[in-house]
Length: 157
Image 1 (cartoon, rainbow, N blue to C red):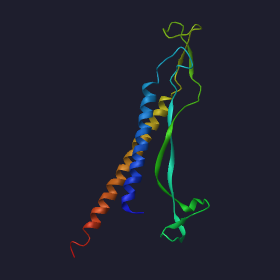
Image 2: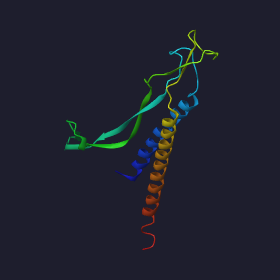
Image 3: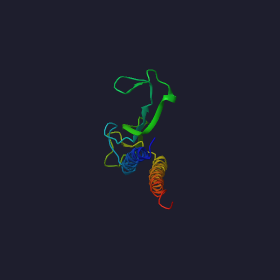
Image 4: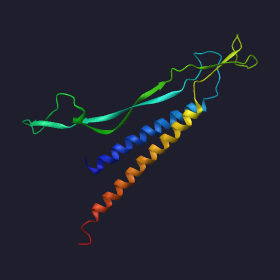
């Protein structure tokens, strides 16, 4: 793997953590929103990530100079090339139903529905995403320093 690929990999990680931070912020912003029906109530959202894998090229080189790809899957034959955001899904946990007959949003039975957002879990997720983002920034900075040092290797000789 070249040092240039490291920037791409860290960039995908930073993008994924940005999506994670945005969904967490959305969840926290809507944590106390109320509704009079289950269908209209905000549900917590979570991003879904997957690794970007690249198969190693192995085998005999064909007539055009390309190697034949691996025909069977073996975890040792793949390399991580970053992270991909597959999408954002809504939580299927139960909503919070509270009896508040004097609330303006109460239904005919006196209940209001609150989102299934756990504020403590969201804050923990926010701190973890922030730290992961910062780790990717550090990887990029370290890689940049290494590349700058490589460029100066022959200057003092």
